[in-house]
Amino acid sequence: MAVARKTVPTKRTVSRKPVQRKQKNNLISKIGLLVFSIVLLLFATGVLLHYRSGIAYYLGFKTDKIAAINTVEMKRFSDVRNYELLSRYEDRVAGIDVSEYQGAIQWNQVRLEENTFPLAFVFIRATAGVDKVDLQFENNWRESKKNKIIRGAYHYYRPNENSIAQAENFIKTVRIRKGDLPPVLDIESTATNQPIDSLKAGIRRWLELVDTHYKVRPIIYTGENYYNAFLKDDFSEYTFWIANYNFFVEDMKDDWLFWQFTEKATIQGIEGNVDVNIYNGTPKMLNYMRVNK
Image (tube, rainbow, N blue to C red):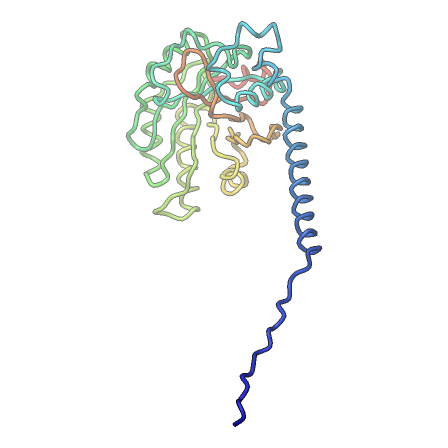
């Protein structure tokens, strides 16, 4: 009797990727990593070279500045940029802006930024919205003048609140004297209860009411993006104080009357971070801006 033979299945040959292809992929990855590392190194070197004087200052290589250095000033790399920008615009005028968030300020100690650059002016928050009065305004307003710092007052505009009532809140709170800076309207956001055209109309009402009362045209404070999107064209007759903290922005534009370039400065006599600004002009030009009535 014939025995049936079992059919043995033929094994399929498994194709394998050539070793050369794997080695090639590894080489490409290594080259990519090397290129990325070189680019990163060049970028870091460029930053270090660009800010070398500020870095040297904070590391104590400038021997004439060592006595002015303390641990507070060395705590943030952003201080290096502050030093560089203030050095670059040393022919301009530096100043700060404050509110109740800085607490009780020791105005007799407020003199220098980075222990080097004189602070000539201060903008002080007076009011916000229809009924808010800054808790430190009266003290800041009085003491800054007593310590011979040119002062100015600003109102934080709340887009969802009545513009006339906001103007009245500022007017009844702030008494501008001869030698003070013009009043400032701080507008930073859009409204949720009205279209942008209505918001612009409210802003204009505030500006006109304050102008009529003090007989001086107000300054408008805002961020650069907000300025370009909503205010630049419709309020071209006003001067602007622009906030831009971008680490790589170093050039003050011609249409910026003031530039708030940082919110992280350290000032003796003030606890916590402080905004620092540069006036786009000389000390003599700043004096021409002051109220003369």
